[in-house]
Length: 176
Image 1 (spheres, rainbow, N blue to C red):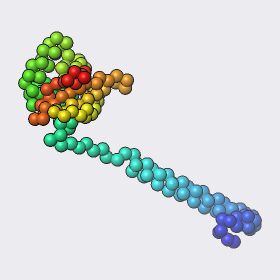
Image 2 (image 1 turned 90 degrees about the vertical axis):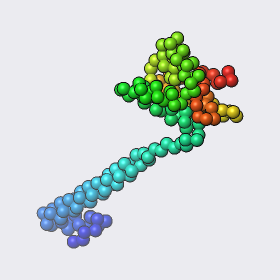
Image 3 (image 1 turned 180 degrees about the vertical axis):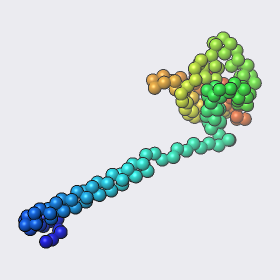
Image 4 (image 1 turned 60 degrees about the vertical axis):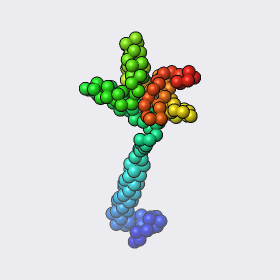
């Protein structure tokens, strides 16, 4: 008797004389082989799928880059507004990042509109994105605040060369 699977017809005919014991053994071997191959494939694919599920994200920036500073400000500000007890941090961030004149301007806007001047809203966005608009004498950035999957607000933020925000609105500091 041979154990080669390609010779299964010979094995089957030979095993019929043994009361079918060899046929059962061959079927059992095939089942184990199929199960082992299936298990190996499943485990192999599972490991591959898990390893490629997502690569680590990275965020980079530079303290001398105004776009980074504007993004840092919005990230920290939104955290302060969202986090319980973040009111003092929110105020400190405004003092650190905004010019004194612009702080007064925002305070007046907030009193008139009953909303947060930095966010230009009463709510807190789910996400934000900062994009360089490019200007010569100061940095102008577009800030997109996302409120839901289909609602966002676009703001224009101006920052001086000494890293202070002096303008925020729907148009740039030059009115465009």
